[in-house]
Amino acid sequence: MEAFLLGLVVIIFVGKIVSLLLEDPEEWVILLKIIVAIWILKFVFNFWH
Amino acid sequence: MDWLQDILVAPFKDTLFTLVSLLFYALLFLILNFIMPQFKEWTRVFFFIAILTTTLKPVYQSFTMMQALSENMIAFFSALYPILMSAMAISAGAMSLMAWHPMLLLLIQFAVFLTGRWLIPLLTASLIFDFLSRFMPEISFARMADFIRVLVLSVVSATVMCYSMFLVMNSVVSVSFTGAALGPLKKMIQQNIPFIGSFITESLSTFRKYSSTTATVTSTGLMIGIFTAAIIPTLKILMTGLSFRFLAALMEPFSDKDIASFLDDIGKTLFVLCAVSFIIAFAFFFTAILAVILLKLQIQEG
Image 1: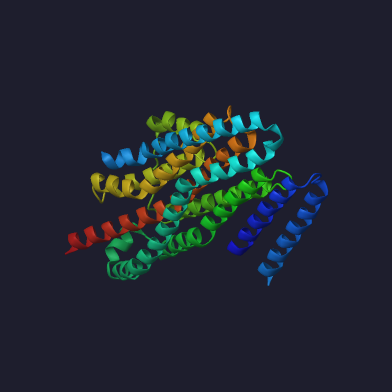
Image 2: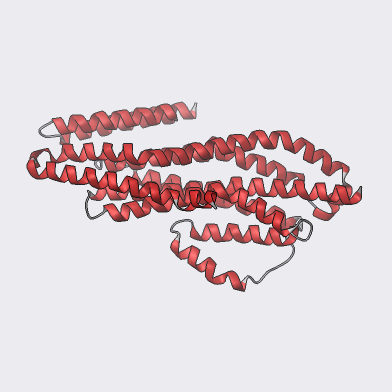
């Protein structure tokens, strides 16, 4: 769980910085949501097995 | 009295120091926002990081204290329970008097293990989810954080209910008390400590009932001593949680809404941690009292 949370913090943190750097971050936020969803799915899959 | 002051006043002293630092940061970032309004989002992010570095220490201390306490308790129980079990087996008189079920000892050990292994890490996760939700509101984990807090609180309530059930089942708590004198105090705690107020009063009520029954065998002074020792970590975390909610209330007019909400969420999580610490307090209290009763009965028989 530690690795999952640490990964999530890194993804959100980097994502936030990138969204601040971009002119129009809306598309980037959607991409970020997809990345977060994949990260959560990976965690659930690992937890299940 | 120094130790009491350390528990009750120190969190608020720390909070005042944190408040001064945060107000200074708020002033600095407000000036920056005024001078460079186009960098408002950036200053918000830096303010968040500043808050995190300033306020994280007492939260981290509370969590590590609980983790260390649960690990120490597991080691303590592992060493003590075989001796207690042997003493119970030998002392038939004590067994019949207390009607103490060995399953209760198993439950205590399991509850403390559950606390260290699952409940505290889950609360840490809820704290991180809160931070992420406030840091980037577009991707919110607020419901997940709330769900974890409610889940942990439910597990704690169920465990405390199991303790009470075992005690009542085994006739350890057989006397019923009206508790009329404690009514107003209970109401005050329920209304003034949000989220876990009623849980605290119910747990204390179980403590009181149990204490009243066992005080006939042990002395009242000893009971108070053990009760105080058991309740100190809980009290310390409760005070830290309250100080965070106080900090959130004070910061609200000067800072971003998300920042005040984040401080409030930290307070809520610490309240749930306080409820978790009740499990350890219960475990320690019951074990210590059982050991004392067994010892006293052995001396009387001898």
